[in-house]
Amino acid sequence: MAGRGPAREVRVESGSGCLAGRFSAMASPCEILIETADTDEARHLSEVAAAEAWRVEDKFSRYAPDNVVARINSAAGEAIDVDAETASLIDFGNTLYELSDGRFDITSGVLREAWKFDGSDSLPTRETVERVLQRVGWHRVDWQSPTVWMESGMEIDFGGIGKEYAVDRVAQQLRDVSGKSALVNFGGDLAVTRPPTERQGWRVGIESVAEHGPAADKVIELRAGALATSGDARRYLLRDGVRYSHILDPRSGWPVEDAPRSVTVAADTCTQAGMLSTLAMLEGENAEAFLRTEQVRHWCRR
Image (cartoon, rainbow, N blue to C red):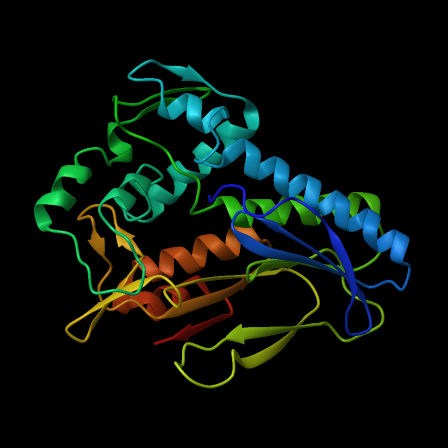
């Protein structure tokens, strides 16, 4: 999960038949579209949303020097006890590790030391990847909730699940304080708080992977539930005509081969949608077959 970006402020602007609260969190543009014409109400709900998003960011970002993730990662081989919320995220990471046969691993964030997905042709050497890979592997972690122990030099990183978790947390906060329909959108991962009353649904664009053309080439109406997208539209390397996705297989330390350019999944919650879209990407050429087996609404782009 990325760290703090620009100064924290909330803006309320007019949208299409609604009001929009906008702010930045987790290195993403965030917006709350609210089915209201009341500016004060929109500002209050937007501030509720931003406060929860920033809370999740501050608690779970690997960039923060003094949060629970920093305590775990700097423990240098000592066991650390965690609170219930952190334990639930670690449990979820453990579940994803098991479901993916080790393809999803919350200890794999250290591979960023070898890979810089900046659109260039700069690949790491195999020796560099192998060296970093020695510090990757959930099977090396002793997790007996609420106590976690890792070898010195290993790290956990909730970047693969944190933003979707924040979307669901914010959506629930808004349901608790308002009966109005709202669309929570954090950098393309989104959820609807409750069905809208003044429209068929919230219009959501599915991002195109074409180099030229419209940003979104498909629009759906979302009345309930959530969407999440995984892909390499902005983070990749290109060398000798081969595109290297930022979706890494933590077992090898190298990008997943033959993965779609993007996978978007609709599900009941953003966390569930994000889980399925990520697991599909990790399946590589078998992404569509995996999603058909899961019987979820999805869009794969290659």
